[in-house]
Length: 173
Image (cartoon, rainbow, N blue to C red):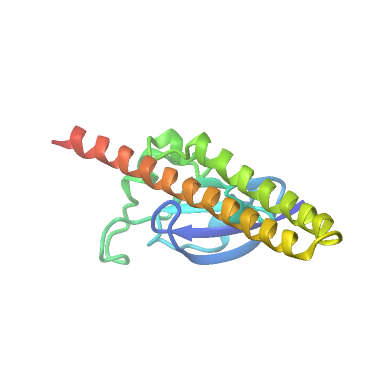
């Protein structure tokens, strides 16, 4: 069993409002256990990941919250939301519902940024043993390149979300 971080979100990639640690066989099992133990009906989306997944965006799994209630008067309407009615199982990912899907390009940029940061650290240490000024310049360059890579990954995710939401708006008119 692994320990998974399970988060409840109002939107994908947004601020996590409730965070709990759950032991599970896999991410689906962790979400199932978390939704049985805690009931946060105001958050439509659940994210489960292990380790540093949230920082890099790798190994993050998104689910629909079966307890989500759209009605603003939370306690007065016992009916579940359209999410829970159309998807009875919490194992369904957001992409199966047609909500924004993370681009493979953003994942690639995050991985490249992490590799640049990691390899730049060791290269800086190697260069630093010979010339400190050159090592400092190299370290600054690697940090800037890595941060640029993370920024592009974020922008790609935002533009992907915008594109999908614009498609939905166009289909509703």
